[in-house]
Length: 267
Image (cartoon, rainbow, N blue to C red):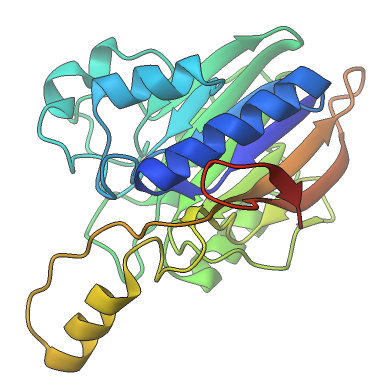
């Protein structure tokens, strides 16, 4: 089973390059399952039902979220009706939506879990305890992929070791900067501190550099528009042995447009 896991998509450039890359990989048979972080797809802040439908139609199988899950007010009223969209598991029990999904792929069931970190982020329930409780309820024989949406690299690495040997993969999101530490941990769990960003290349985390500089230099509130231009998809490619369920291959990946909306090449 070949799985593409996509880092935070930002605005329309992120959605555009996602559609083009996934279409290419689906056509060539290079991926069988696509998991993507979509908490920034609506002009950089949250997601709408229409955009979720757009991404599923474009080839996403499961969409994960993060601290901007409620960036679009409408989502609260419809998140429970959107299949295969997951928000952080360690939100309070009364929070709308679900923290994991068991997706039925052509290769069998795969569990996808979304967690949110606590270091340098808004107060939230403990992600370590939340995932422990969930793992006690999941079938032992299915792959489990965890998107850990967190700020601190130390918290992400700690989660990797905490879950090593108990889940198939732990991948980080949120910082929008791809890290170079894709590896398989001693217990067999694939690990990457951050998948990176799917959005405009010449940007500050997907936003217009001029606006971000103005905010930093002036200290005044500034509207941070999504940057325009050539975009790239960053993430990871995970391959799982169908018989044993073990990770057979894991590596980070990057696909970039030659021009906005144009031909895709691999970096």
